[in-house]
Amino acid sequence: MESQTGFGRNRQILEVSDEVGDRVVRLRIPARAEYITLSRLALTGLARVRPFPDEVLADLKLAITEACSNSVRHAYDEGDGMVDIVYRLEHDRIEIEVADDGTGFDLEGSHDDDEAAELSEGGLGIAIIRSIADELEIGSGESGRGSRLRFVKSLGGPSSPSAG
Image (tube, rainbow, N blue to C red; front, side, top):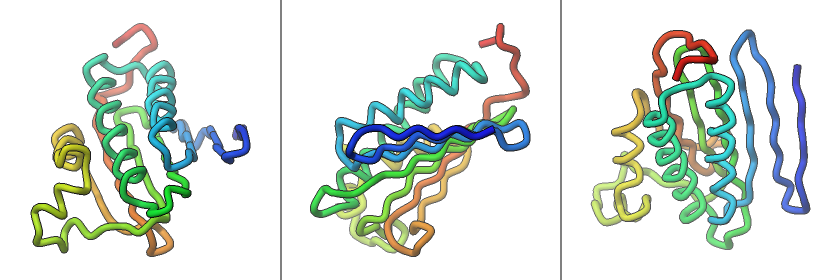
């Protein structure tokens, strides 16, 4: 089953689907700081579908905030773009991807520590995500333009609604 809801003139889109027992939520927000909260709210909603410990939820909220902040701060020179966030909730893990079609960055190819530090809030965003996630991938967007950051966090085995 799939549902889609659009909001306002900024073309925010929320899409929820069930893919063979996995929950997938797609959220599209304007690349503006005031919309980052929506990425955390979607994560909180998923934690109601598949409960996981409060400290894991707090860590994931921090990671998603850092990932979205990078897109908001660095992707669009004119500040007029969109950030796509995909959450894939499986029985034992959550996968989160943040992508934009902005200017992108080359973290691996950068030999300048100052340039790499500028890619995150306070210079620690990528390091924070790396410390929270069990897997982390950073690269170009699907179109070859922009950036894509994907991280995975293990949630342990299946959980019952009363657990967590």
